[in-house]
Image (cartoon, rainbow, N blue to C red; front, side, top):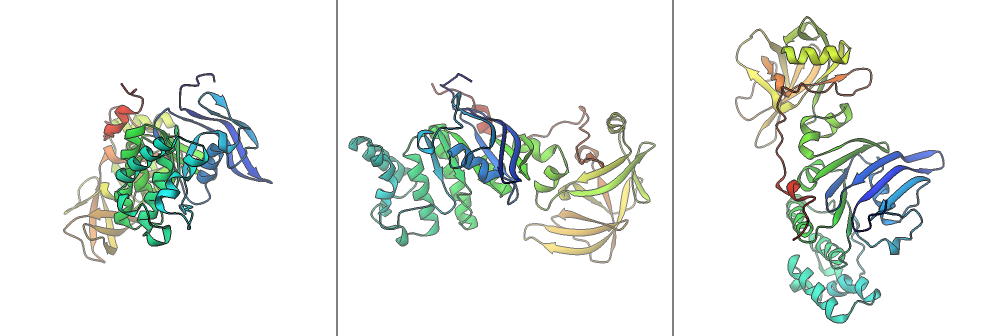
Length: 385
């Protein structure tokens, strides 16, 4: 761990606990130089604690944390050279926007001309020029959020840490703010660590997503891989809205049985199941991948429509198959409640998990990985010319 020129962050078997309660346990994670990584998970999973450990606001009980190739377990917060944006913005109420943004620079005795240059650049970038002399109470929530971002941006730190910074904004402002965050990162190429419980933010902002649950890392990969090839049941159900349908299934004679109904699956899936050495499975299928059919065919499942939700641009259709509830999405030709319908499963879109531990049995190599690669992923490790 001696490369001081990199902006990597490395967790090595880190434990954090309060008494006997572990917040994160045996945590291992490598955050790449200049990438945008999202710490995602439900409330209480340890994501904010992980961010505060990076910032130096929380001590660790065991293990090691490295930043820029240096072990920083005992390095104080003020010496870690990080910029952090909190959920509550933490603005000084008696200071103007300009004073809030530059306070940290003045405290570090940055030269006046450089302070003005950074301030003007941040005000312009985040559309705050006309608000420079206002106080926080004269601003909307979205404007305050931009001030907090500007304050972090002017610091020019190699590490940019954000703890649910958009959670207090309405949907339209969140969309705008996400775009601004990506623009800021593309301009300065900090190592950006972003905490959220919002999967849309995670999918749209991150180069990679680190999904946590109960202090343990469930999966870390590109957003498309996490969505299309989840490593376990928790990942499958947490990512996606509505969440993935998960049902008990048994394998036999080239078929998957759901209750008394069955569907044939391709030979490539049969081989995958045999390699997994189990017949008791959990079948996963996303609501958007359940296809309605007008008539019963060899590999359709008969279902009864129980309830329909109108989402505006599509409908959520709740179905019952062999006493099991499923949800399907459709855009038109919505079936009526109480009606029997038929549904098809696309074999390229199914997911199979071991029932005993919830882990994926993997995917046949013949099934293409339909992965929409972020344009920004190509530039994660690209060096500035």
